[in-house]
Length: 327
Image 1 (cartoon, helix red, strand yellow):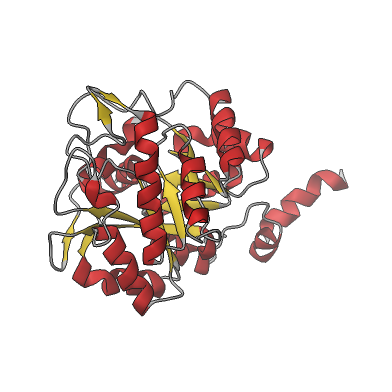
Image 2: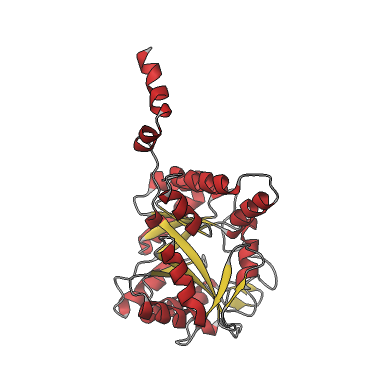
C-alpha cells in the first residue's frame, strides 16, 4: 500500500514534481527559423505564419537581437532571392541572400549559431528541390549543385549546413565537398526522414517555393512508412551525417521514437509551419489555450526522443522554460 501512495506524494509538491521529471527541456535545444528576403528593406509580417516576420538584409540585427533577448542562440536561415532561374543559381552565388546574411550575422554576432538550409526549391523558377530533366527531378545532376551551395554557405561562415532536398546521396556529396575545401568541422544536419506532408503549406507561401507543377512525392517520403525512415537515416549516417532530423514532428512522433531507439546520433525534429499555424488559429478562435498547447506539443516531441527542436515557437518556449512551465 505504501508503494501505491508514493507517486501521489510526489505529485502533490511542485518542487518535487520538477525534480522528478523524466523529460527536460532547455532553450539551448531550440532553433528558430528566420526568413530573409533580398528584395525588401526592413521587415514585413508573414501572412501565412501569424506572429512571424520576414527580414530584409538590413534588419538582421533585429532578428538576432530578438532571439538573444529570449535566450535563443541558434537559428536556421531560409532565403528569398531577388532572382530565380531553372538551375537555382543564386543558391550558390557568393553574393546570394543566404551568403550575405551569414556574413553579416557572423561579423556582428560571432557566437550566434547559424544553420543554413541547403536546397534549391527557394531558388529555382520551377520550385522543385533539384534540377529538372523534362518534368522529372534529376537526382544525380542535382548533387554537385547542392554540394556547391553548402560549400558556399560554409565559406560565408555558416556553423552548420542542413540539406533539406531529400536527393539520394546528397549527404555524401556535401561531406566530400566540405572536406575538400577544409570545412571538415562544419557539421551536417540531414533532413533524413522528411515526409511528403500537407503541413508545409504556410512555409511554402512564406518562402515562395511552392512547385509550379506536380508535387514532391517523388523525392520526399510516403507518410505511410516508418521502416523506410530508418533506412534513410542509416544511409545518411553512412554518408557522414552528424545530426538526423524527422520532419514534420507532431504527426510523426512514432518515427522520432523509432529513430531514437535505433541510432545514437543527435536527433532533431522540425515542428513545421502547418503545426504552428494550426495552434495559432485555434488559439485565436478561442478553441484552445494556445500557450499551454504550445508547451504540451513541444514536450511531446522531446518525450518521443528528440534532442533538439526547430520551431516557430522557439522564443515563447524559451520563456516558458525560464518560468518553469516546462523544462
